[in-house]
Length: 325
Ligand code: PBG
Image (tube, rainbow, N blue to C red):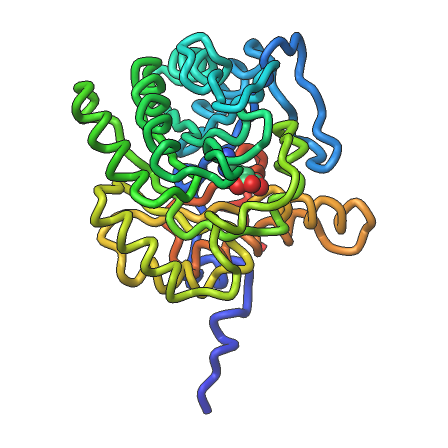
Protein backbone atom coordinates (compact mmCIF):
# COMPACT_ATOMS: atom_id res chain seq x y z
CA UNK A 1 0.00 0.00 0.00
CA UNK A 2 1.15 3.52 -0.67
CA UNK A 3 1.57 5.24 2.73
CA UNK A 4 2.01 9.00 2.29
CA UNK A 5 1.38 9.39 6.02
CA UNK A 6 4.95 8.13 6.69
CA UNK A 7 6.18 11.59 5.80
CA UNK A 8 3.80 13.19 8.31
CA UNK A 9 4.80 11.18 11.37
CA UNK A 10 6.71 13.84 13.29
CA UNK A 11 7.23 17.60 13.31
CA UNK A 12 10.82 17.11 12.15
CA UNK A 13 9.77 14.80 9.30
CA UNK A 14 7.11 17.27 8.17
CA UNK A 15 9.65 20.08 8.26
CA UNK A 16 12.10 18.01 6.21
CA UNK A 17 9.67 17.43 3.36
CA UNK A 18 7.94 20.81 3.43
CA UNK A 19 7.73 22.07 -0.17
CA UNK A 20 7.13 25.71 0.66
CA UNK A 21 8.95 27.94 3.12
CA UNK A 22 8.64 31.58 3.98
CA UNK A 23 11.93 33.38 4.47
CA UNK A 24 12.18 36.94 5.81
CA UNK A 25 13.97 37.99 2.60
CA UNK A 26 10.80 37.10 0.65
CA UNK A 27 8.81 39.63 2.61
CA UNK A 28 8.19 43.33 2.14
CA UNK A 29 6.70 45.39 4.98
CA UNK A 30 4.34 48.21 3.94
CA UNK A 31 4.82 51.33 6.11
CA UNK A 32 2.66 54.46 6.41
CA UNK A 33 4.18 57.84 7.25
CA UNK A 34 1.99 60.74 8.31
CA UNK A 35 3.10 64.29 7.75
CA UNK A 36 3.33 66.24 10.99
CA UNK A 37 2.78 63.24 13.26
CA UNK A 38 4.86 63.47 16.41
CA UNK A 39 4.24 59.89 17.45
CA UNK A 40 2.80 56.76 15.81
CA UNK A 41 -0.99 56.89 15.34
CA UNK A 42 -3.00 53.68 15.57
CA UNK A 43 -5.15 52.58 12.60
CA UNK A 44 -8.35 51.19 14.13
CA UNK A 45 -9.19 48.78 11.31
CA UNK A 46 -5.62 47.42 11.24
CA UNK A 47 -4.74 46.55 14.84
CA UNK A 48 -0.98 46.66 15.29
CA UNK A 49 -0.35 48.83 12.20
CA UNK A 50 0.31 52.55 12.61
CA UNK A 51 0.79 55.77 10.73
CA UNK A 52 4.41 56.50 11.54
CA UNK A 53 6.03 59.76 12.49
CA UNK A 54 9.32 60.44 10.74
CA UNK A 55 11.14 59.29 13.88
CA UNK A 56 9.22 56.07 14.33
CA UNK A 57 9.61 55.36 10.61
CA UNK A 58 13.38 55.38 10.99
CA UNK A 59 13.11 52.92 13.87
CA UNK A 60 10.75 50.65 11.91
CA UNK A 61 13.08 50.55 8.91
CA UNK A 62 16.07 49.83 11.12
CA UNK A 63 14.14 46.95 12.66
CA UNK A 64 13.14 45.66 9.21
CA UNK A 65 16.80 45.70 8.18
CA UNK A 66 17.89 43.93 11.35
CA UNK A 67 15.21 41.27 10.87
CA UNK A 68 16.54 40.64 7.37
CA UNK A 69 13.33 41.58 5.58
CA UNK A 70 13.49 41.81 1.81
CA UNK A 71 12.26 45.37 1.75
CA UNK A 72 9.88 48.06 2.91
CA UNK A 73 7.13 49.71 0.85
CA UNK A 74 6.47 53.32 1.79
CA UNK A 75 3.14 55.17 1.62
CA UNK A 76 2.82 58.85 2.49
CA UNK A 77 -0.11 60.48 4.26
CA UNK A 78 0.07 64.22 3.56
CA UNK A 79 -1.34 66.97 5.78
CA UNK A 80 -2.91 68.81 2.84
CA UNK A 81 -4.25 67.67 -0.51
CA UNK A 82 -5.22 69.26 -3.81
CA UNK A 83 -6.75 68.33 -7.16
CA UNK A 84 -3.45 67.36 -8.79
CA UNK A 85 -1.70 65.79 -5.82
CA UNK A 86 1.09 68.36 -5.64
CA UNK A 87 2.54 66.79 -2.50
CA UNK A 88 3.59 63.78 -4.53
CA UNK A 89 6.00 65.72 -6.72
CA UNK A 90 7.29 68.05 -4.02
CA UNK A 91 10.81 66.96 -2.98
CA UNK A 92 9.82 68.00 0.56
CA UNK A 93 6.50 66.11 0.36
CA UNK A 94 6.00 63.49 3.06
CA UNK A 95 6.69 60.46 0.87
CA UNK A 96 9.93 61.88 -0.51
CA UNK A 97 11.04 62.84 2.99
CA UNK A 98 10.20 59.31 4.10
CA UNK A 99 12.34 57.83 1.33
CA UNK A 100 15.38 59.78 2.49
CA UNK A 101 14.80 58.71 6.09
CA UNK A 102 14.26 55.08 5.11
CA UNK A 103 17.32 54.96 2.87
CA UNK A 104 19.43 56.28 5.67
CA UNK A 105 18.00 53.83 8.21
CA UNK A 106 18.25 50.88 5.83
CA UNK A 107 21.90 51.60 5.07
CA UNK A 108 21.82 49.16 2.18
CA UNK A 109 20.57 46.28 4.35
CA UNK A 110 17.02 46.13 2.98
CA UNK A 111 15.39 47.43 -0.22
CA UNK A 112 13.50 50.73 -0.03
CA UNK A 113 10.40 50.85 -2.25
CA UNK A 114 7.77 53.57 -2.64
CA UNK A 115 4.25 53.83 -4.01
CA UNK A 116 3.89 55.81 -7.23
CA UNK A 117 0.24 56.84 -7.19
CA UNK A 118 -1.66 60.04 -6.53
CA UNK A 119 -4.55 58.77 -4.40
CA UNK A 120 -2.99 59.72 -1.08
CA UNK A 121 -2.25 63.21 -2.38
CA UNK A 122 -5.43 64.21 -4.22
CA UNK A 123 -8.39 65.90 -2.52
CA UNK A 124 -10.78 63.69 -4.52
CA UNK A 125 -8.89 60.51 -3.62
CA UNK A 126 -8.47 59.15 -7.15
CA UNK A 127 -5.21 57.63 -8.32
CA UNK A 128 -4.88 60.23 -11.07
CA UNK A 129 -5.96 63.70 -12.10
CA UNK A 130 -9.45 64.33 -13.41
CA UNK A 131 -10.45 65.76 -16.79
CA UNK A 132 -13.19 68.32 -17.37
CA UNK A 133 -15.82 65.59 -17.28
CA UNK A 134 -14.56 64.34 -13.90
CA UNK A 135 -13.03 61.16 -15.35
CA UNK A 136 -9.52 60.00 -14.44
CA UNK A 137 -7.30 61.31 -17.25
CA UNK A 138 -4.89 58.50 -18.15
CA UNK A 139 -2.23 60.39 -20.09
CA UNK A 140 -2.20 63.52 -17.93
CA UNK A 141 -1.80 61.22 -14.92
CA UNK A 142 1.16 59.46 -16.53
CA UNK A 143 2.89 62.83 -16.90
CA UNK A 144 2.63 63.30 -13.13
CA UNK A 145 3.75 59.72 -12.45
CA UNK A 146 6.89 60.45 -14.50
CA UNK A 147 7.75 63.41 -12.30
CA UNK A 148 6.76 61.56 -9.13
CA UNK A 149 9.05 58.62 -9.96
CA UNK A 150 12.00 60.86 -10.80
CA UNK A 151 11.48 62.83 -7.57
CA UNK A 152 11.50 59.57 -5.64
CA UNK A 153 14.64 58.48 -7.44
CA UNK A 154 16.30 61.78 -6.50
CA UNK A 155 15.34 61.03 -2.88
CA UNK A 156 17.19 57.73 -3.21
CA UNK A 157 14.47 55.13 -3.66
CA UNK A 158 15.63 51.68 -4.83
CA UNK A 159 12.34 50.56 -6.37
CA UNK A 160 9.33 52.57 -7.56
CA UNK A 161 5.99 50.81 -7.46
CA UNK A 162 3.32 52.28 -9.73
CA UNK A 163 -0.05 51.19 -8.34
CA UNK A 164 -2.48 53.45 -10.20
CA UNK A 165 -3.38 51.10 -13.08
CA UNK A 166 -3.02 53.77 -15.78
CA UNK A 167 -2.36 52.32 -19.23
CA UNK A 168 1.25 52.74 -20.26
CA UNK A 169 2.43 53.86 -16.82
CA UNK A 170 5.39 51.48 -16.67
CA UNK A 171 6.80 52.56 -20.05
CA UNK A 172 6.34 56.22 -19.18
CA UNK A 173 8.05 55.86 -15.81
CA UNK A 174 10.90 53.78 -17.28
CA UNK A 175 11.53 56.43 -19.94
CA UNK A 176 11.44 59.27 -17.42
CA UNK A 177 13.83 57.50 -15.04
CA UNK A 178 16.25 56.67 -17.83
CA UNK A 179 16.17 60.20 -19.23
CA UNK A 180 16.95 61.56 -15.77
CA UNK A 181 19.89 59.17 -15.46
CA UNK A 182 18.24 56.75 -13.01
CA UNK A 183 18.77 53.64 -15.08
CA UNK A 184 19.45 51.65 -11.91
CA UNK A 185 16.11 52.35 -10.22
CA UNK A 186 13.84 49.32 -10.61
CA UNK A 187 10.10 49.19 -11.25
CA UNK A 188 7.80 46.86 -9.34
CA UNK A 189 4.60 47.11 -11.34
CA UNK A 190 1.22 46.53 -9.77
CA UNK A 191 0.13 44.69 -12.89
CA UNK A 192 -3.04 42.79 -12.08
CA UNK A 193 -4.62 45.03 -9.48
CA UNK A 194 -8.29 44.45 -8.87
CA UNK A 195 -10.96 46.89 -7.68
CA UNK A 196 -11.24 45.14 -4.35
CA UNK A 197 -13.38 45.48 -1.24
CA UNK A 198 -10.34 44.19 0.64
CA UNK A 199 -8.61 47.57 0.32
CA UNK A 200 -11.13 48.95 2.85
CA UNK A 201 -8.85 49.38 5.88
CA UNK A 202 -6.12 50.96 3.71
CA UNK A 203 -8.46 53.85 3.07
CA UNK A 204 -8.40 54.61 6.80
CA UNK A 205 -4.63 54.07 6.89
CA UNK A 206 -4.06 56.85 4.35
CA UNK A 207 -7.04 59.07 5.34
CA UNK A 208 -8.42 58.51 1.83
CA UNK A 209 -10.76 61.17 0.47
CA UNK A 210 -12.27 58.85 -2.14
CA UNK A 211 -16.00 58.82 -2.76
CA UNK A 212 -17.16 56.23 -5.22
CA UNK A 213 -14.84 53.57 -6.57
CA UNK A 214 -11.89 52.89 -8.86
CA UNK A 215 -13.61 50.58 -11.33
CA UNK A 216 -12.65 52.55 -14.42
CA UNK A 217 -8.97 51.81 -13.83
CA UNK A 218 -8.61 48.91 -11.41
CA UNK A 219 -9.67 45.52 -12.76
CA UNK A 220 -12.94 43.62 -12.51
CA UNK A 221 -12.52 40.75 -10.00
CA UNK A 222 -14.20 38.47 -12.54
CA UNK A 223 -11.33 38.68 -15.04
CA UNK A 224 -8.30 36.39 -14.96
CA UNK A 225 -7.35 36.51 -18.65
CA UNK A 226 -7.29 40.28 -18.51
CA UNK A 227 -4.92 40.05 -15.54
CA UNK A 228 -2.50 38.06 -17.70
CA UNK A 229 -2.77 40.70 -20.41
CA UNK A 230 -1.94 43.44 -17.92
CA UNK A 231 1.06 41.42 -16.71
CA UNK A 232 2.25 40.83 -20.28
CA UNK A 233 1.98 44.53 -21.08
CA UNK A 234 3.97 45.53 -18.01
CA UNK A 235 6.69 43.03 -18.94
CA UNK A 236 6.83 44.51 -22.45
CA UNK A 237 6.97 48.01 -20.98
CA UNK A 238 10.04 47.10 -18.94
CA UNK A 239 8.80 46.14 -15.47
CA UNK A 240 11.56 44.55 -13.38
CA UNK A 241 9.03 42.80 -11.14
CA UNK A 242 5.28 42.41 -11.49
CA UNK A 243 2.55 42.07 -8.90
CA UNK A 244 -0.86 40.53 -8.36
CA UNK A 245 -3.06 42.25 -5.80
CA UNK A 246 -4.92 41.40 -3.58
CA UNK A 247 -3.49 37.94 -2.94
CA UNK A 248 -5.93 35.54 -1.34
CA UNK A 249 -8.89 35.99 -3.66
CA UNK A 250 -6.61 35.94 -6.74
CA UNK A 251 -4.36 32.92 -6.21
CA UNK A 252 -5.38 31.51 -9.60
CA UNK A 253 -4.27 34.70 -11.32
CA UNK A 254 -1.04 34.65 -9.31
CA UNK A 255 -0.30 31.07 -10.37
CA UNK A 256 -0.87 31.84 -14.04
CA UNK A 257 1.14 35.05 -13.94
CA UNK A 258 4.00 33.25 -12.16
CA UNK A 259 4.00 30.48 -14.76
CA UNK A 260 4.58 32.88 -17.64
CA UNK A 261 6.65 35.61 -16.03
CA UNK A 262 10.30 36.06 -16.89
CA UNK A 263 10.78 38.35 -13.87
CA UNK A 264 10.12 37.93 -10.12
CA UNK A 265 6.44 37.99 -9.17
CA UNK A 266 5.08 39.69 -6.05
CA UNK A 267 1.72 39.38 -4.36
CA UNK A 268 0.20 41.84 -1.89
CA UNK A 269 -1.66 40.50 1.13
CA UNK A 270 -3.75 43.64 1.47
CA UNK A 271 -5.21 45.52 4.39
CA UNK A 272 -8.54 43.68 4.37
CA UNK A 273 -6.82 40.31 4.35
CA UNK A 274 -4.83 41.44 7.37
CA UNK A 275 -7.89 42.86 9.12
CA UNK A 276 -9.94 39.68 8.62
CA UNK A 277 -7.30 37.54 10.30
CA UNK A 278 -6.88 40.03 13.15
CA UNK A 279 -10.62 40.41 13.71
CA UNK A 280 -11.36 36.69 13.69
CA UNK A 281 -8.40 36.00 15.96
CA UNK A 282 -9.44 38.77 18.37
CA UNK A 283 -12.78 36.99 18.69
CA UNK A 284 -11.04 33.70 19.41
CA UNK A 285 -12.45 32.20 16.20
CA UNK A 286 -9.15 31.22 14.58
CA UNK A 287 -5.61 30.49 15.73
CA UNK A 288 -3.95 33.76 14.79
CA UNK A 289 -0.38 32.60 14.26
CA UNK A 290 -1.37 29.46 12.37
CA UNK A 291 -3.75 31.46 10.17
CA UNK A 292 -1.03 34.00 9.36
CA UNK A 293 1.42 31.32 8.32
CA UNK A 294 -1.17 29.38 6.34
CA UNK A 295 -2.21 32.51 4.47
CA UNK A 296 1.38 33.32 3.55
CA UNK A 297 2.27 29.75 2.63
CA UNK A 298 -0.74 29.68 0.31
CA UNK A 299 0.43 32.85 -1.45
CA UNK A 300 3.98 31.53 -1.82
CA UNK A 301 2.75 28.11 -3.01
CA UNK A 302 0.63 29.84 -5.66
CA UNK A 303 3.79 31.33 -7.14
CA UNK A 304 4.78 34.52 -5.32
CA UNK A 305 8.51 35.12 -5.08
CA UNK A 306 7.92 38.22 -2.98
CA UNK A 307 5.04 38.88 -0.58
CA UNK A 308 4.01 42.30 0.67
CA UNK A 309 2.41 41.75 4.06
CA UNK A 310 1.69 43.75 7.20
CA UNK A 311 2.77 40.63 9.13
CA UNK A 312 6.32 40.74 7.71
CA UNK A 313 8.14 42.01 10.78
CA UNK A 314 6.14 39.95 13.24
CA UNK A 315 6.66 36.59 11.60
CA UNK A 316 10.32 37.27 11.04
CA UNK A 317 10.64 38.33 14.69
CA UNK A 318 9.21 35.09 15.94
CA UNK A 319 11.06 33.00 13.39
CA UNK A 320 7.95 30.95 12.69
CA UNK A 321 9.28 30.28 9.20
CA UNK A 322 11.70 27.92 10.89
CA UNK A 323 9.55 26.40 13.58
CA UNK A 324 8.81 22.71 13.72
CA UNK A 325 5.18 21.91 14.50
C1 PBG B 1 -2.95 52.95 -4.15
C2 PBG B 1 -2.86 51.73 -3.30
C3 PBG B 1 -3.89 51.11 -2.58
C4 PBG B 1 -3.31 50.03 -1.92
C5 PBG B 1 -1.96 50.02 -2.23
N1 PBG B 1 -1.71 51.05 -3.10
C6 PBG B 1 -5.29 51.52 -2.40
C7 PBG B 1 -6.25 51.39 -3.50
O1 PBG B 1 -5.90 51.03 -4.63
O2 PBG B 1 -7.42 51.68 -3.24
C8 PBG B 1 -4.05 49.07 -1.04
C9 PBG B 1 -3.20 48.27 -0.10
C10 PBG B 1 -3.96 47.59 0.96
O3 PBG B 1 -5.20 47.55 0.97
O4 PBG B 1 -3.30 47.05 1.86
N2 PBG B 1 -1.99 53.92 -3.76
